[in-house]
Length: 110
Image (cartoon, rainbow, N blue to C red; front, side, top):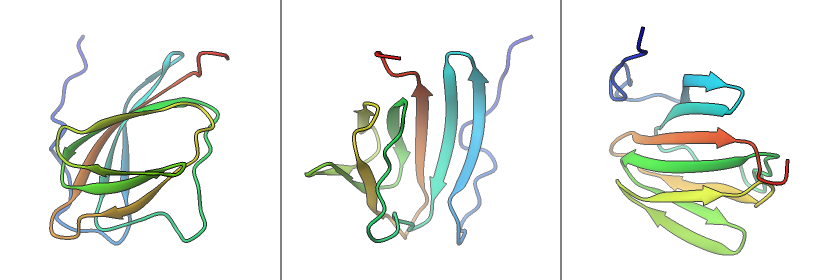
């Protein structure tokens, strides 16, 4: 039986927290939908993940700092974050939810 759904269904209009939904998970990794409502990483916090992550912005806007580079993301923008590449969310739009599709998978050297 195929797994079906709608990536845009069930997203609240606003929230004080980011909303994470795992869409599919297996030995190969995890696909999740993230909805941000103006959130950003806490001051001084950096993600430093042991796995690779590929992220696509479906709706909204965001600013992502990857090491020393600042990326402006809009619908259709994507980025591959290799394992242990430090990154943080500097800003997400407050006038509409920023909807991300994130695919987490093992690093090539794992």
